[in-house]
Each structure stands twice: as C-alpha cells, then as structure tokens.
Amino acid sequence: MNRDDFPILKDDLIYFDNGATTLKPRRVVDKIVEYYTEYTSNAHRGDYKNSVKVDALYEGVRDKVKDLINAESPKEIVFTKGTTESLNNVVFGFAKNYLHRDDEVLITKSEHASNVLPWQVLEKKIGIKVKYIPLDENHNITEENLEKAITDKTKIVSIAHVTNAMGDVRDIESIGEICKKHNLIFVVDAAQSIGHIQVDVQKANVSFLAFSSHKMLGPTGVGVLYGKKELLEKTEVLEYGGGMNSYFESNGTYELKNIPERFEAGTQNIAGVIGMGEAIDYLREIGLEKIHQHELELKRYAVEKMKQIPNIKIYNENTSSGILIFNIDKVFSQDTAIFLDQFNISVRSGNHCAKILKDEIKVTNTCRISFYLYNTKEEIDKLVEVLNRQDEVYDNIV
Amino acid sequence: MDDKLKRDLILEHYQNPVNRGLVDNEDYIKVNSRNESCVDNIDVMAKIEDGIIIDARFDGEACAICTSATSAMIKTLIGKTKEEAEEIIRNYENMINELPYDKTLLSELNVYDTVYKQPNRKNCALLPFRGMKEILEKSTK
Ligand SMILES: Cc1ncc(COP(=O)(O)O)c(C=O)c1O
Image 1 (cartoon, protein in one colour):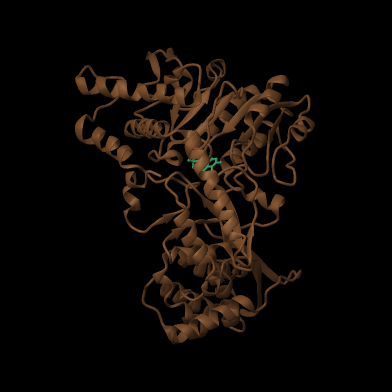
Image 2 (spheres, each protein chain N blue to C red):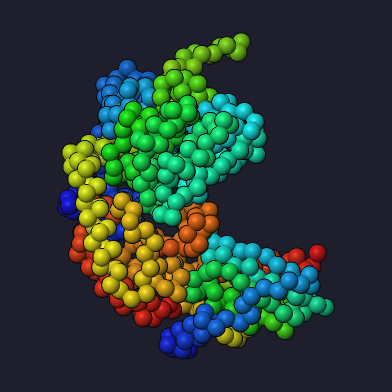
C-alpha cells in the first residue's frame, strides 16, 4: 500500500530489509528539508519567530510520541539518537544506581546486542547477574518460564517486544502484569515493533521503552526513551552541557532542568525529531492495525509460497510479525543475499546482531526478510521466482 | 582466465576445501578472523619451521568467496618461506584493492582478480589473508 509515497520505489527495488531500516515517505523527507531551507534555528533559546516555531514543532513531537505509545505525559518522552542510546541510558543512568551486587536482570538469548552488551558490562562493573529466561521450543517467552526464572534477587526484566533475529512477538501485557506482581522494572526494546504493532506503555506496565525513528519511516540518528515519570526522576544524567541546566555558577553550584530536558544536553537532532513527528502522523493516518494485518498477510503468503520451493528451510513459520527467517539448504546466507541482490532484492544475511541466538536455533547465519506496508505479493512472487533458480546462486560469483 | 574456469575453481575450493579442520597441536599458531559485517568467521592455523610454512589449516563458517579464498590461500602458501608468503599476500591484497600487483606471484589466487567489482565481497576475499598475516607476525616473536 501507499507505494507512490516512497520515491525510492520508483525503480524496481524490492526492499525486504525493513528490520534494518525502513524506507522514507516523501512527506518525511520534505518535512526535514523544510526545516533546513525555511526556518532553521536552534530550539529553546531564541526570541525570534523561527526559533519559537522550532520550539513548538520540537515539543509538539513529544506529544505525538506520547499519544503513539499512550504515555501519561510528554515529560516521560526523552529524545535520544536511537534505541541503542536509550537502552544505554536505562542501564548506566538508571540500573547502575538502582541495582546492587548480586541483583539479577532477566533477558533472553534472542535479544539484540544493544539489550545484552550494556547489561554484561554492568555485570562486570558492579557485580549484578545477567540471567536468561528459557525460551520454549518456538523460541517464545512463556509466562511459566518467566515465573520460574524470577527469584527474590530479580529486579529487572529487559526484553524486545519483537525480536529482530526471529521475529517473535512477546506478549508484553502479560509479561508486564507479571513484572507488576513481582515489583520488577520492565524494560521494553520496541525497535522492531514500533510502527508495526500498537504499543501501550500504560496497559503493559512498561517502566522504560526504547525505539528508533529510522525503523518506523523516520530519519536516522533519532529515537526515543520513554520512562515512567518517577523512574526518569531517579535516572542519572549521563551528558552535561547546554540546554539541560537551569543555572551553574563559578563556585560550583548548579541546578539541572526538569525531566525530560535534563537528558537532552547540547543541540539536539532537531530536524530528525521533526521528521520523526511527521513519520508518526503518517503511520497513524494509515493505522497501525492495518499495517500489522498487511504484514501478517504478506508473511502468510510468503511462507505458503516458499514452502513449495525445494531446499528452503523456514525457521519461524509461526511467529506473528512480518519477519521471516530462512536459508537455502547448504548455501551460506550471505551467498543467498548477494544472489538475490543481483535481482534487486534486498534481504539481510548474518546473525542479525543477536550472536547468542546460535545457542537457541543452532544456526549462526540466516537470511531475513522483513516486510512493511509498501511490500506486495507481487514482490514475493518475484522472490519466489528467483529462489526457484537457486542452481544459479554461484553463477555470477566472479 | 575465463569466468567459467574461475567460477569452477572457486566452487571446487568452496565445496572441497584444502585442509579444512583444525588440529590440536602446539606447533601451530592459530588466529581467529571475523568480518565487521558479523558474518564470516574463520580460524586459520599454520605450522612454521625454520622460516617455512610447513602446514596450514582452517575451519569456520563463511561464504563461498571467503571459504574458497582461505582454501586457495592455504594451497598456495604451504611450502613457501615467510618472506615469499608475505610477498604473495601483499600482491594479493593489492589485487583486491585495485592497486598494482604482480600476477605471476599469485598462481591460483588470480581467480579473485575481479572481486573488486563486488565491494560487498572484498572483505570476504581478504579475511583469511588478514589471519595469515597475523600468524606470520606472531611467528617472528
Ligand atoms: C530489536 C532491536 N533492538 C535494538 C536495535 C538497535 O537499534 P538502533 O541501531 O537504531 O539503535 C535494533 C536494530 O537493529 C533491533 O532490531
């Protein structure tokens, strides 16, 4: 749907790597260009018209994000450069002070690097323990397994809403319920779900939520950290400078601004934030449920077609997101991806930055197709046609 | 060399690589090399005596270009002195990076002389050589 809105699709590109980043609609690009060509100015400082306008637009995006994820207040929305920075803020700004030696953090083996490494570093630094919630045979988190993994040392559960390596969708509402019952901090990495599935932070009892604009039709270099008000109040600021202090004196006294401004030191990615706001409007006008249903329909269609191709193994047939993981038997995933690229079909190969997944599905490398609103069944037909020519995979190797 | 011949040689090295499988032997120096793109991951090991590469082996998971280049490298370098090996590696890297090189030194490795046309493959073709250079460096210490 809406293919005409995406300038890059005017040629015969088949883009199936939306899990890595998404294409951008003209509207979003125009909105960014407008900031640079018509009213460039800094935020939070000017006494002149353009700066006032920038302020209003920039702060307006906080409201859009608040509505998108149903936060209680725009003060709970911090702009960051993306999911990675947001999660690092949670770990080193919040958890580092909140946790004590031997406290336990629960994650899973299919998390993205940005939801594993910071925790592992914190483990080394202050002696917390990172533990893995066992996954069931479909790589899902079950309520039962989660309950079993929780001990009286458990303080935080930090998981992806949708995993990038398997595309499984976690039931964050029921997990949130369990976290509430045990009084746990619940951190959700929404990088793969935002813009695909409706997220409601209040309903799911989410403590912190992280996502990136570039995976939801917006520009790169900007994203969001949502934190419940009382938790953001307890989060240490990791960057100091202009725009985040109320005053500072030569004698060493200073006062920081309130949340969320105190987390936004220095000139922010203003064009990026404004572009992200436009992407949110665009997505909400189409409707997230409609997008989600479209992705599921494409996935069902692709699974059905691909199952008829010899030597294709699909690893996540039953997950309910637009992510499909496969390999051609005995062909290294990267060779498959490079072969498909010869037909202008972009898919991702590799371990999808979730290195520990190999412990779970026993394959280290896969090809990943990830759909979005502009993908079509015709594109899948083309993919199937090319995969049926798998004998030619090495023909153009040199 | 025509493309078909090149392709056949590459596939032969990919499907039936030389000396795949590591040995547990302290006379060998072993290094692990990975690609930044987090896909190719190979171990290369070599036994060097009196300045000569007596044996080399590898194992790992990698694409066709990387695996075959590792195999072709091993085949080419066994029996060479360290200095000869360094010279071959230098010329091979120049070939991949589109710099002047002496093709007479590269024997079978010449099959990779068009890899530069596929920027996404360059690192795959270079990876085993990075590992072997590290081994040669270590062996001097
Ligand atoms: C599940 C998940 N978490 C986190 C990230 C990191 O996002 P970013 O690179 O935008 O910070 C990604 C991106 O691939 C992801 O898929």
